[in-house]
Image (cartoon, rainbow, N blue to C red; front, side, top):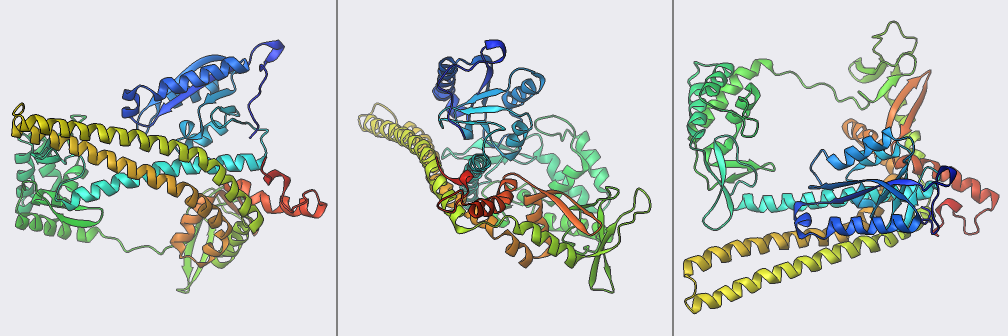
Length: 518
């Protein structure tokens, strides 16, 4: 990416270039602390004033990184699409702007100049392919950080499950509450628990269908907690299948003995499962053959999908569905398509020199990411010490008789729980800090080996890999055409470009000029 301009930017007829500002924090907690959004806005306003940019609008989002529907980002994208003059976005850094790959694609389609102020870089349509590729790596690393924090959250929930505590929102018939030790637990909902029990009893009797027990539960007030809408038949089915109402529960594929009060007996629950299994036995369908390219390839003649079928019990052939009429494209063997896709993935292969440089570039970008995590850990450690000081001071007050032992135990339990959450967040930052660089390099190595991995995988894994790497695959007259998804499209052109520059002697060390670090 090019560095931001040091002189005043001018638009048409000497007018200042107009821009929008975007700021985001990843949690409500950061907003309450009152530093992140104001700091971002102050930095971006000062940058706009220095470079002569006129700020038309400011967009702000304050929400969790995994929550869908960022209103500020959506409003900004809509504004930029509708504006004929504004094509500049100011943002603190990459992980403030993008939350996932979809956000990247949304802004890439609008054709913008994006100024990453803290990273001292500008990305535009005129940026070099290597700059766009490294920007794509940063986007993937920002997504990886979100996924890593999500993984740490799941880890904490699993630890809670091992203690016999349901680690999520209470299911219908229960409600969330604070336990005696300050931990969140579930307890029977006085209004809905009896309705759930009767739902099981009626269905186990064999006299009611699923539709009938659902109708009776609705009549007794069984509604969704948030929308207050009556439950659906599918919801009633999930309730009847859920083991949690016996006092035990399944979490992340493992059974746990819960500490909450059961709403039905184990015997009643097993009887309901037997009834459900008997009624559904006649509807089960035989598993279909696992075809590698089902739903991935279209006919280049008419646009219909290619469908597969087995001939002579062992040979798999693909042909156009012919939904739009008779199609001239003949049958093709699966082995032929496998070979063509293998050749396509072979275009991602690049030599060790490019891998070495990209790894070096990742290490440089990792420094900024490491600084962010280190600052967060330092802040959280101060918060942990603050809670510990509170506990110590109140312990002295308890010894002096200023507070009761009961009050001390209750408050100390609350603060220790806060400390536990802080330690979990610190661990998440430390893990993300460590994995950022390692997984980035692994991504590059994976791209180099995509072809060999593809050829060795099962049909289902082949389909999954192609879904990640390519799109818009068509087959016409024996030729396969497909589009590489971002950032693999940039990788695909690197080997040829590198070979051409080597042949021309334009790079003394053998690397493409586009890949040389600044």
